[in-house]
Image (cartoon, rainbow, N blue to C red; front, top):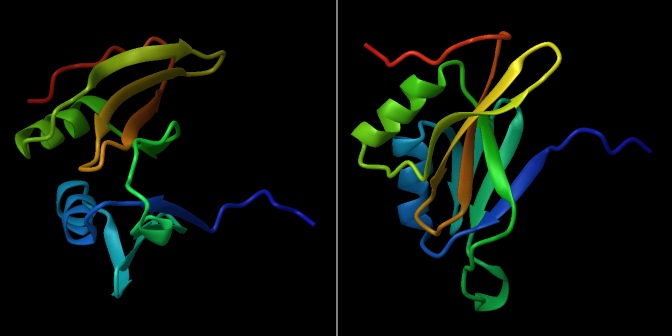
Length: 131
């Protein structure tokens, strides 16, 4: 058995319509389909399923996070800011790695789930403000 590739991630949301709009319109994820209160998005071959919590439980902020790779972290943060999304943690260097530098910024979805934006940049890369 080889359990090395994730096929789908499920995320409980308090309001499917609101979360569907956020992930599709605000974040720009490609919606695959909606079936009742379940909404499915494509994230480069991994499905993201948004659904109501199990057995009517309230949605609470999870301890985990979803991280999206972006080619230009400052541009991504700027675009989200222009859509009215608060940047919880501005773009910053997280870790200088041996062969690249890891930069991140963080936002939250309508239910408070943490969403990381990550960029693996060439060593010594300096973020420049978008034009």
